[in-house]
Amino acid sequence: MPPAPLASPSQVYAADFARRFSLILAGLSALIARRFLRTPRLALLIVPLWRRLNRAARRCERLLAAFAAGRLKKPHRSGPGGPHRHPALPTGRLWLIRALGAEGAGYAAQLQHLLAEPLAARLFARVPALRRVVLPVARLLGVGAGTAPRSSAGSTPTAPGATALRPLAAIATPALA
Image (cartoon, rainbow, N blue to C red):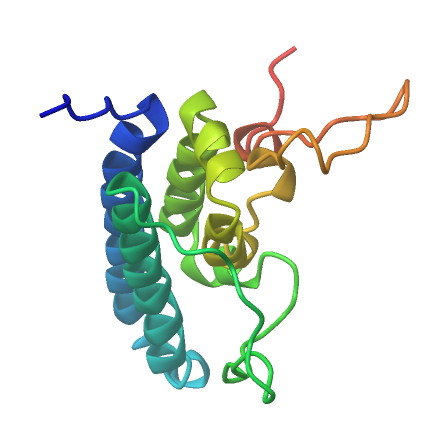
């Protein structure tokens, strides 16, 4: 019997990424419930946000478990109805961070750190569907799309003199000079 093929570093890292992503979203969900229950106008957003965050965590775990097991399905188009519509949530820039305060910024920083890891970039390149799961959550938290790089085939070169996205920590704290 031939020996089983060795798993790639991306496949080994996939389970850890899914676990850490789920932990960040679980803590964020608890924070949302705790903070939004105190504000009547935000209390109606608890259930839609919980659904969206928990669904993203489950989809990430399923997707990366299939990738680690070597059973990743090829992407297919949605049915005739198109993608599912989500309940309306506020769309203003950084609205969730403003509502959650410093603790929310802490979860955003954790997610930004997770997405900035070199193995995460490889994982996004190997599993393109992961971007569709993770980036909506990143947008909710104000984490820049530049944190989770696209594969090199679909990226365009940066123009000379263009400024890169600054990390969330650089935006949240004034520079010491």
